[in-house]
Image 1 (tube, helix red, strand yellow):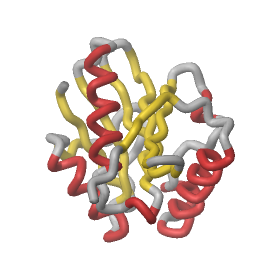
Image 2 (tube, one colour; image 1 turned 180 degrees about the horizontal axis):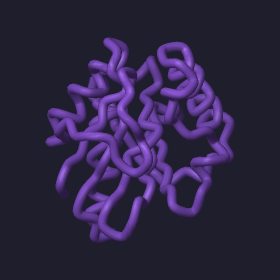
Image 3 (tube, one colour; image 1 turned 180 degrees about the vertical axis):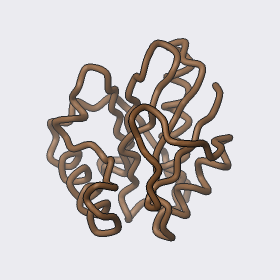
Image 4 (tube, one colour; image 1 turned 45 degrees about the vertical axis):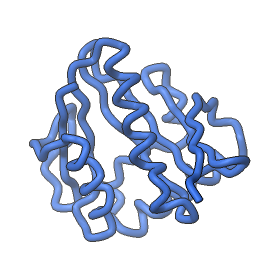
Length: 155
């Protein structure tokens, strides 16, 4: 059975969204030292430079993702997380493509991201690589960190 994924802007007020953000942050802290956790909490995701979306399958929250504007031509992918119940349904790819299309529509010419370097993050790394992201150096205040991989992609 193929799942229909609906992606929509999210105001971060709903309980399912806040729970998935908290679960995401908890997972980041479980796999990385505090100084290597760059995920944003719900309050930081409400910054005016951040756009936030949620992905739904039926009435269930399946994933979240955000785009932070670095400047008029560059954006940073933030807080990508798929609920464990929906891994393998294409939710992460759908969110990523939605965010890339939105960034293009705003006139951005590149996207950047930081993700983890441990085995827990291999699925995310493979997703980003399959969508044209390549490894790069730190950007926008990040520093070299053995727990981080930095990636970018032209749009």
